[in-house]
Amino acid sequence: LPSVEDYWAMETRVPQVANLMSSKRFRLLKRVVHFNGNTELPGSIDRFFKIRPLFIFLNSAFRRESQTPKQSVDELMVAYKGKTAGNLRKYIKTKPN
Image (cartoon, rainbow, N blue to C red; front, side, top):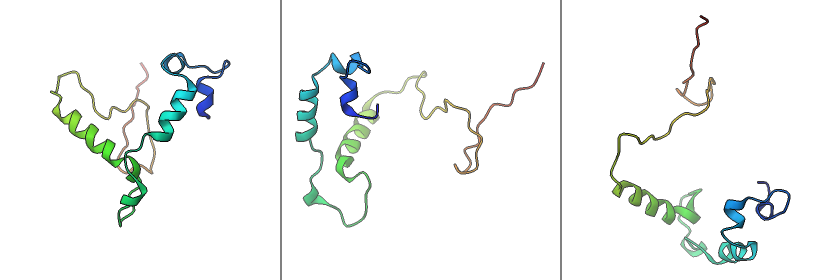
């Protein structure tokens, strides 16, 4: 949704979010939860600097899980036929019957 407040608004309420916690509680958590401080700014430009520790944690947690035959990684859900995505030219050609 365009605004965080829209998750709790009567017209655009999202029950999966609004039933879980109040908007006041969400704003408090958003204000106080930090994964990396500004004092630890690296010399290089890392676009994900603020949440890099979360990425590292999730990556290691996902690697600990055992693989199953039904897992799918990076599945292309929408047909794409473009020129700007490198060699990502996966699309289904249908033949008329």
